[in-house]
Image 1 (cartoon, one colour):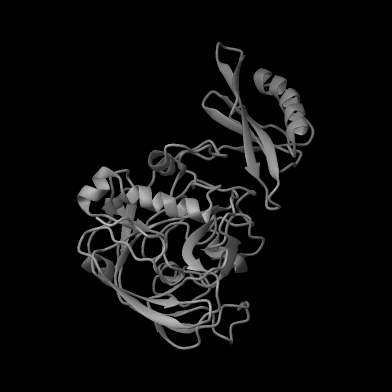
Image 2 (cartoon, rainbow, N blue to C red):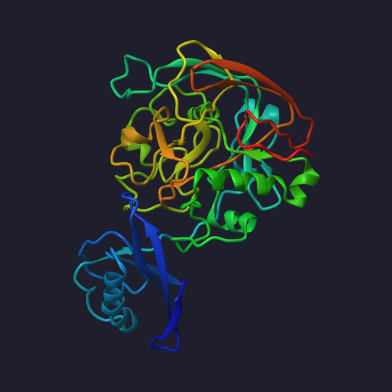
Length: 391
């Protein structure tokens, strides 16, 4: 990224930085970020004319290519520096959200079932993990539900082991600390890490597990299975959303098309579900470790689907979803494992040392059981994705 400084009246400077992002059509889009007086103003995808109302605002303009990005910068910079008059035609201005700290782990409300497992655990880089109890639930959508889509056939799933799931999606700041490199398309480290493929998300889990502090503590990380993700999202509910069936109420829990202003938002700004998990509906899709496959018709224990297919499951919907129906607890989405967009992120599981049994479903729809024993150490299992290095 190239950054330049321009003088600002009053002795300050305006920093201009080139950004690149990907729109839903997988085409690269260029933008410029202007930073002044602590305010970050980004010119990426959307265009709507509006009048500037006060100096501390965020600017969003269209920039579908390098030439248009440069034109936008030349058009906007004089107006930005002088702070006078209306915004240039075709420019949308939105107030910057107030900065807010993430909830402290000690303030998260846990159910009695969660408390029986333990408190929220915080790892060496500040990621918080809520305990999720073992249990049985109906995965998918019942046939009588008018919102049901293809591939959502309801079936009974039992998760025999408790686990800990990230309270938030992995943030840009956390990703940077583990991977040592990241070029965020958004200016705040509390935004979810996006532009991350499935394979890179798996690599993040491996590197996090291998940090010296995490090895010393016996902590091991992986992506959640699709069943674990939906179970945690539902948090004991059987409704369309973890907050009920009302899309209006959903706006207090989720960022999607109705309220997201066509972009991701920092994690933790909406209300959590009953198990103190934030942003399970909307904001960004979240990678799961499963390949996309048909659900089994019979009851199943600890399922995880593997196979040769290139399509991996992502759950939760995103800011880009045009309907609240697309961020329901049961909705399934499949993306190529190489997909990198600004509406897909991920959250991770911190495994609780136990005897772990997974039912594997292969490409032919057959199942087999694999039992693993691990006592506080990282483990390796070829049939479980990702494979962690043996301790």
